[in-house]
Length: 237
Image (cartoon, one colour):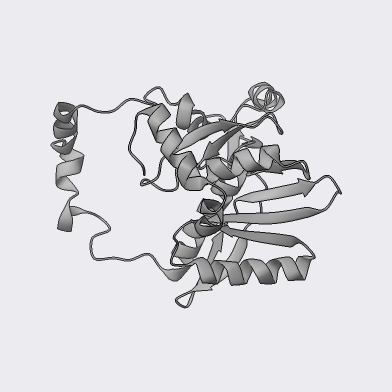
């Protein structure tokens, strides 16, 4: 078997890949082709937007692997991830969110795509709260550009453990100044995250804005949600 000695980093998730052919490596690198894992995420997944039928779900649930790995048969049964493992998982997830390779971070919110007329980029909205704020940013004449893919990860402590979280936005003003913005609905960790963000920005000479739902509601968020739901024939989430 040939040695896979030619390496490259996935342009989306940063994962290292190895190849037996330098030609293949160079072609993928030149075309900025994402790794196999990233290529099958989101809209690139052939099953994107589809759902398993109840019959299919039942068949999957009765497969040997699903049946044999429940309860005590699960290799991880009775075990827990170590503190180091949990921190590694947290760091990996934070990196994925920061570079845009992870988008679906909450399963209980209305998620949409938004095309910014200021940045000419298609952005994934984790909630209608974000979408409402993105529309405001696009219409704000004091803002030159904004992005969700900024690679910033803020360390914070919660219940005695170290975590990292990714602020929502990195904004550049027309004056050339930059600031970090967090759009926050309900989050039991909010005060810990805001304290960490405040300290991070103070230490690095960066401004920050912490915008909560109450503030956005004063700017018409509830009316926006009602109109959005009516236009899309869906219930509020």
